[in-house]
Amino acid sequence: MKYAAPSSVEEATSLLSSSPSAQVFAGATDVVPQIRAGRPVPDVLVDLKKIDELVSLTNDAEKWTVGAAIPTVRLTEDAAFSGEFPGLSEAAGLIGSDQIQSRSSLGGNLCNGSPAADSVPALVVNGARALIAGPKGTRLIDVSDVVTGPGETCLASDEFVVEFELDRMPSRSADAYLRMIPRTEMDIAVVGAGARIVLSEDGTITDAAVALGAVAPTVVRVPAAEEALVGTLADDDTLVAVAAAASDACNPIDDKRGTIDYRKQVAGVLAKRAVLIAIERAGQRNGDV
Image 1 (cartoon, rainbow, N blue to C red):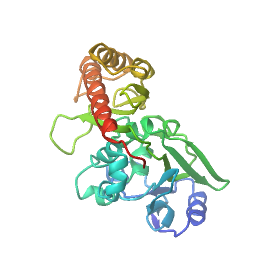
Image 2 (tube, rainbow, N blue to C red):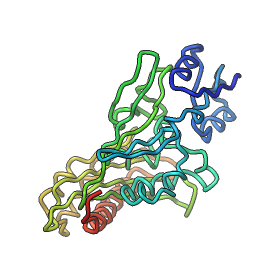
Image 3 (tube, rainbow, N blue to C red):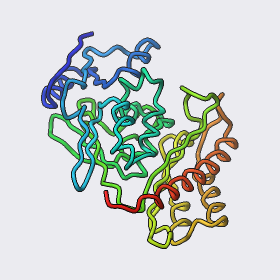
Image 4 (cartoon, rainbow, N blue to C red):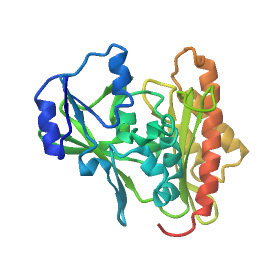
């Protein structure tokens, strides 16, 4: 196995095209354990952390641009980013231990294809877009379209995610992410729930997004919960409808971490709680970005 550390997107795509089994990595927090567990060893491992675009964090008046390989600790420790996207920052901060977060990345968390990836529901509710590079150039797609099944993505073998785009969070809007795990730290989500809420001046919800992780082969949006929220003040009846919609949207499996019925119940509870946190945060964001 050869190791390569390209300094440009073009060099990386060329290396990927040089071998059918070539593979990129951002932090190797997944690829190394996978190889040790018996996954096929690639001919070439391509380290993306030497490419400036992939480890940068910038913003302008319209959007944030987050490098796909930037260590998640850079996101959680950036006050401006965490202040604007607290839910996404919290989700990034749940990827492994403090040591892991000096290497882990949003790109790796997404492209590993785990249904339980913590950052993905938070990316989805925020309408994140992924810039994908390959030998034919780049393309921009919704994050929700990247993962197609457990361990599977829509990326060709010679493509990789360069960066994510996130529209700036307007005033009176906010996100939140919650997960349920059996232990207090460093475990895989039994259920994860992300929410984003936009409020009018009188507190009425004008827009809502709800997404669940670890309850289906891929992260799922919950349109029925979103529809139940829009135009309301999120009273008790509305929140009951949100929880029911979240439970109904699940298509989970039975495994050692939770049964189907348990996951459905927890999904409803977490969705409701994430919505309430997002509402509270949105009410506190009265100024422009």
